[in-house]
Amino acid sequence: MSKTGLAVALAVAAAAPSAVLAQSLGGDPAKGSEVFQDRCTACHVLAGVGQGPSLIGVVGRKAASLPDFNYSAGLKASGLVWSQPELDRFLSGPTKLVPGTAMRATVVDPGERHDLIAYLASLRPGAH
Image (cartoon, rainbow, N blue to C red; front, side, top):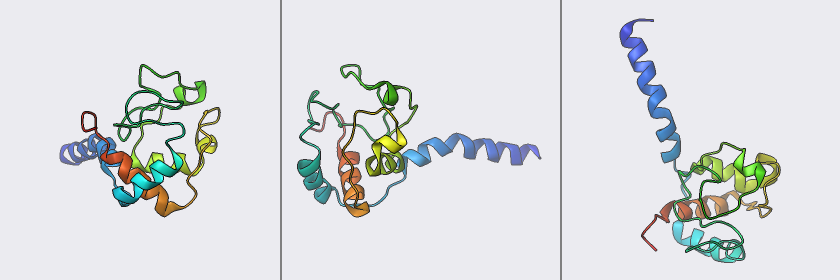
C-alpha cells in the first residue's frame, strides 16, 4: 500500500467511531417524547436517578458510565457505546444484546424505536 493509501485508510478508520455515533436512524423526536412518556418514565427520569439511570446525554455515552447509578454486571461488562444503532439493537431486545442487564422493557415497533431514539438524541446535558 502506498503512503497516500495508508494515510487515507488511517483517516477513515479514525473517523469511523464518530461517524457511527452521528448516524441517525431518522425518527420524530416529538413522537419519541410520547413513547418515552408511555414506556420509559416508570423507571427513567430526566433529572437525577430513578429505578433506571438518567437518559440525558445517553446518545454517544459509554454504557454503564454514570457515576451515581448502580448498573448490572452485564451492562458494566458490555463495552457498548450508545450510538443510535446500538440503542436500536438494545431496545429491540435488551437481554439478547446484554445478557444480565436489568433492563427488560422492549420497544418492538421499529418506527416507535426510531422516534424514541431521536428524542433521546435531543436530550443534551443542561438543556432540561
